[in-house]
Image 1 (tube, rainbow, N blue to C red):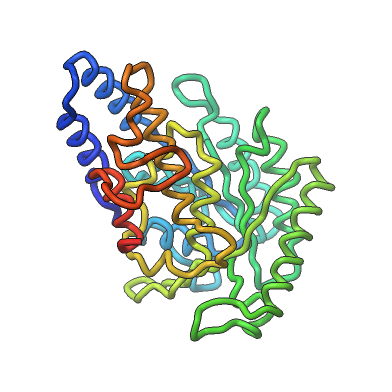
Image 2 (image 1 turned 135 degrees about the vertical axis):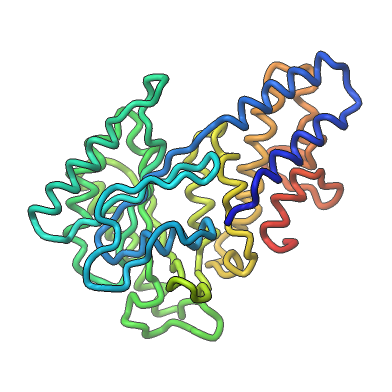
Length: 328
């Protein structure tokens, strides 16, 4: 699970090896320590059977989240998982009966309104996962429109992400190319229609704009090999870009280091380059703050500029992130 603290070790090593004054080095080290201390609190919720636990296991290469394989949902209360600076809140799924759903909804509302030690809302982001294999999303819309969005504070659109899992069985397994691990055109059209339908239903119910995506987490039974995901890189790109910039590096040490997990996506854009850009901007803005060499930070850590990944001459930091994608 995870990569220990190798990323931050690489960053500190790069700073210590710079040919700069001690004053400048100390500024960079202070900024580095501030970034290193940042925690991201991510809540993952959705109806029972939508694949919350499988998604956590795929993204972060961990089996801390139990995958439900029986009749009773495995996650009965909001469960906290601390993975270095990444704090995951795996919420109970709705769809377990009125009494249980009321109890779960109250727990979610309470957690969404909880404040941290600085008086800020504890939960940075809520990832709502929908079950792509069912047409009946009534429970999910109730969760989103009546429980989550009304309790997201002022910047609601920045704090909610909606993703449709189990894209491979959205049409009962039809039109999924199992050999190439991707949907055929007929299924792509169906999934795009579902994405648009979800977006409209949320907009009509709350006035809030969302940008749903579809993916497949790849089911994993305990002790068994992980089935290969689809659009996992798009999902993580989506999560990263909605994370406050100074907290983005909290993910690095916990990303799934199996490069095969990130390979297959819809090719609509280069999500891996986008992930590099997201981490790169966090490094440039975070480390260089208040330092006279701030503008040179990108070159120091192997980034020519925000938005572009260097073709060669990667520093230890960028080489480490790049290595997560199997030498991409």
